[in-house]
Length: 188
Image (cartoon, rainbow, N blue to C red; front, side, top):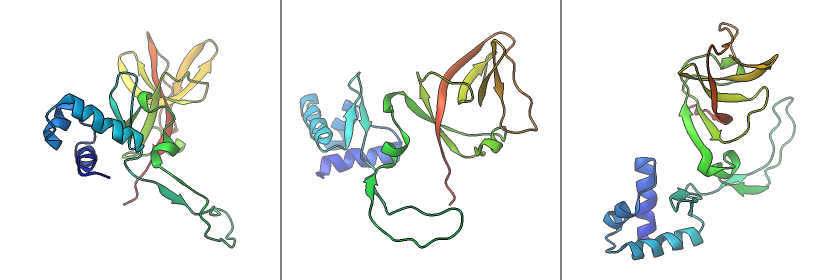
């Protein structure tokens, strides 16, 4: 990896976003957008980044790959052999549509029985058609929440994943913005 590519990746790790073309010029000392365009082209060819439909830079393999060493039994213990099965990036495993996926930090305990705890990060995908029983990010009567989407008769209702809370029946409007596709929890 060349020095200018490392500067862009370091910016991403610090700022939690990819730099724009002007920022890349300042970071690298490159004098023209054409030079930046060529640098980005090399990063796309190296599979570090990709471009979305608007030409915006999206990280791809910045984090590197992690080894999949086998399968671990979560039931009764069994003999295990360490065998390199494959390598994969966390992005490849968790995100199918990078342009439409975003992360949200969870607050509150209304989805705890669904395995989603306060402080977790959820990945949500815009544009995905929600199905009955999906966990969704929704605007209901002007407020935002994350709940199970379920049909009750001809009406959509939002159900919590915690018996302490009641279902939410929209009085006026329910707008499903995204479907939750993954939960990330960090233990330490």
